[in-house]
Length: 336
Image 1 (cartoon, rainbow, N blue to C red):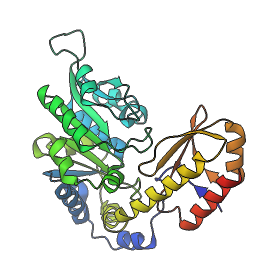
Image 2 (cartoon, helix red, strand yellow):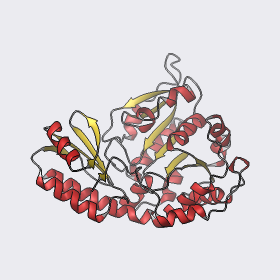
Image 3 (tube, rainbow, N blue to C red):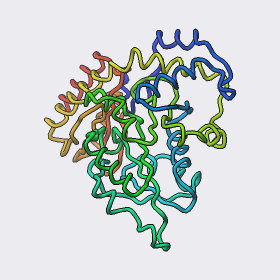
Image 4 (tube, rainbow, N blue to C red):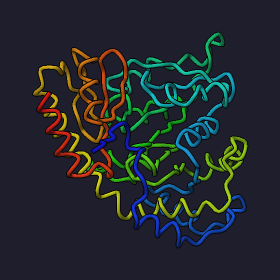
């Protein structure tokens, strides 16, 4: 049995999600006439207590649009060195917005208010790029699915307000964080200027990310989406998958987290494993002392994983990773 734990993006629509897709009421979203897209945008904006939302085909495009809305060419944003907007969006920060990144050496992809304060360039020192935006990520991808506390977010918000900086949240796996911490989505709407929430990671929709914010910052979002090539027509079929995921897959994330923690325990008991990062959600990052032997063993048993280099591997649980697969995976690890 092949077990694919590379990412929570490898899932396929369930039969029930396919029915939701087939039965979707659609229109032309470029004209804002797709009722299912409009419903998804309205629902997510209301969940987070924000005024408006816009559906994007990908998380990277939504993040890039947010950065464009917050900045002007030649300016600079602050983010952790592990941030997705810096590492995994093809250099889009510079290509799309003409903005540079000041990287912070945080903890597991998370940064503090003091670190933000320390990395802001003096606005009257014209030799440095003007700092105008802070980008945070929750949960953190390269940080192993770590979750920020709301208190840390509020402390950072106090700093960004003091210096009149924008505050954007890359919430690609924010649903996981909400389940793991039992936080209220509206608390996020009170803190951040813009938030992107992904419907394919963890939630299992084939595509789609929604960018939310207040009317003033979002007024040009649809224009930026068009410039980036993100105008779509009868995309309500995919928005219907997102609505189905909110109703039926959101509660299942807790099981993904439980299985990830069980994998972490099994790995920590293996002599071949030198370190297992703390597991809060659905990402397990660990180091091995003989990568070649260990990965050949996983390959032999049809276990698909992510190789992060230098003996560091990653497993990500998801709803296509079944109870049967989980028992087999645990057995494989115990026999190494």
